[in-house]
Length: 307
Image (cartoon, rainbow, N blue to C red; front, top):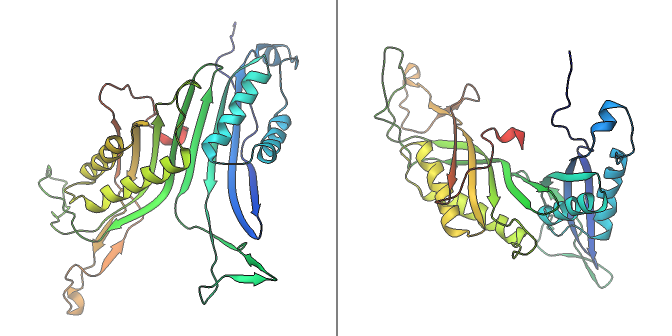
């Protein structure tokens, strides 16, 4: 039976690169996990085994480390743009590059008295602890003319201990959930947002500031929304970002509801006045939705794990 070759890509996945920038005795860390995927005129490497158009995956790995030295890492987005442009523009058979990056954040360790330590006359700032918050993400795609930049985060755990209700829902013969008029609302945020920057002729966003501001509006909306459902909170988070960040056209959330159930303390003769909860890790409600700027077409996949 005749067959044809379908969509294909190749590259080197999960290249861990840590870049230390030394500003005297003060050091700065960028810790990235970079995955490269290339596609183009690659039929023959599959059909006949000819490697004439194949840039070795080992070369893509080496490029990641060389570029960390040559260009530095100003931001995950900027670093991914350098890589994508290089692979497409320097290799004729390569027509499209996709760069996915995870960034792991570090924060500086301060001394117990809050003062910096000194060696000789220099202030020493080179000790760090890995932040236990979210992982920053970005995906850069380039086809030689147009860019698509989708950034985001995962594993950002947030909680409101009050100002959340859930009632008035459909009830049938299988419904046992009690209506809640004062509950804990907690979730582990996974989110991606798409920038409207698509070409070198446009003004490029300030990637670092944009990430900080998107996260700020996301958290402020979560904290300030009196929630009647996690869906409502999600929409407020997305709307706040779209309305305040002109460089973002689309944002998608995947929010697992990290349920906290009141513990029945009556068998012990105790009253539980919204104080003691059981934190259930599974099963969990999973709330997912996209918020778009009016007139914009959705492009971020429903399943965020595919990014």
